[in-house]
Length: 205
Image 1 (cartoon, rainbow, N blue to C red):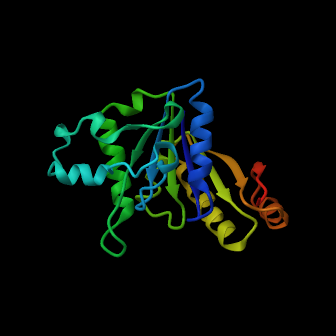
Image 2: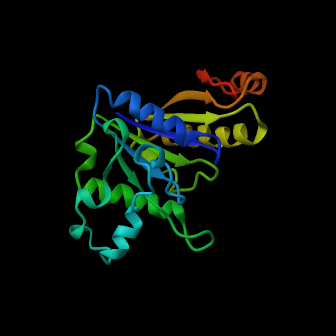
Image 3: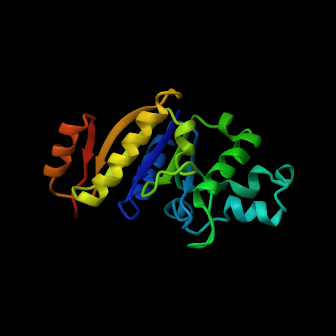
């Protein structure tokens, strides 16, 4: 199974992704792929910022055949394997392009065949072609939001992207997780207009 976790920057999607990965890894083999130029999705699992795929490719002059799984896949907490796509500095290029290159390399390494569950942790502020690339491979999309307008605005754009991708790919929207909020009135108003499951609402503590 392939799961894409999307959400507005700073909403807690990486923490949510890591918790899901560790829980699932108790029974299945899991790969978590960080798809954010900050390359910190897997920091909680590894304890350090692992080398990114884009940096590794640059060091190999983009000779994909010279990259081995151990160059880009690192073992994290609970047995979760971790990958970081990386990305260019702000204003210096397209982070979404890097996500596409990451998927291409992992497919060439046959990584998609080695795991029971692959979890993409994806920046959801801008759902451009590159950042939407994981939706081409995911079976389900999970959206992390809070009870605020900005996060729900981003969630709505992600949901619209899932709807479009689902026309040509076997993709389904798993639902919403409300994070860091003790209220859910705006979340409930949103799902009245755009029906989808609310899987959990996690309080701000």
